[in-house]
Length: 196
Length: 247
Image (tube, rainbow over all chains, first blue to last red; front, top):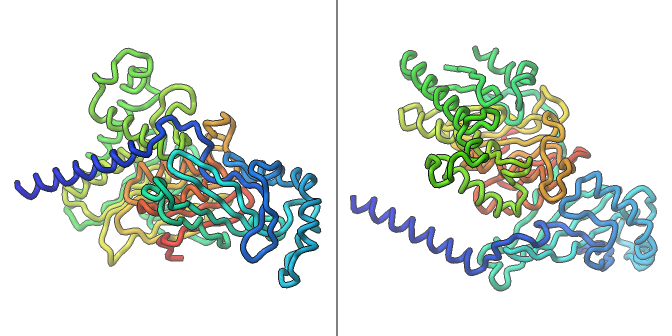
């Protein structure tokens, strides 16, 4: 009894504290820009850097799809390629990237997005382009002021790896079915019949 | 004992692995199925008299709704905030909390099974999986490959937790970006692994709606115990550091 009471009180206190923190920081109406990415071109550590302006054309936007981003970047490269090429000249010989030479996509290098502020803090995303494709993504979450209490000190974005296809020696498959029609053909069905 | 039930517009497979008498296992599976059908009747947007639809058309006031529905709507409101609006029960126009309800109902079913003594089991509701078991024998959960339907991209080892995958490969343009109203694009599939299936499912769906930005957003969920794996439209794969990958 006593322990459960204490537990309940503890839980409620915790919840109150969490709510308190939220309220103290909160901006209830989420009208700000969507979460991460608003990329303007800039370089990353160890690569050539072009310091982009926020919202510069041609960079992926938060709601952007891969395709849209790519198209946008492609278009943007016409506008920004001059800048990129200038950067190329300053480039240190150590960087093996074939940079601004590409016509069909963004130049190789590291691009840092402009800082985007949402109600919970400011997010800044960096991407690395290799062979015209994004090869690494990183995001930083400043720990200053209020945001440090809610955002983790630093959140590394997910790490890229190679997509593999393998046969399933599994108990269940996530994502294998959405509808009853497709179920008939699905891997989940095969597993179920195998186990029946 | 294995069972497949067609309910909530999808196939739900249930496996109970505890050495209980067959009659008891059948009874427990029957309880799970009855609960899922009950949820379908109360929350489906396809049934005119469901509680959700009655609330939507104003036939019942929110304060007169069941505690379950009020809890669900409260959780959906929290998700709307935590996803910056990308998880939106009004994304299709009317009230449709089914993106949360399926995972929630399976969570409830799994908890009831455990309480009834069936502690090692898995429930797979149309590709959203909740498992319970013992650490020595983790369940092997495959993550469907986004383009090769009979292959998996990863095999995860999960003892007690949820694995939800949202993908555009089957539902086509089903997932929309609520900000633009257009079909989401950028990510082919997103998988989230964590303690609660309803949240894992909502996070995966929100990431798909975000598109490319979802990769970074999912990274922010790691602090809450939700690991993730993502495949982009152009075939890149991303995983969080703590994803329990077996192979």
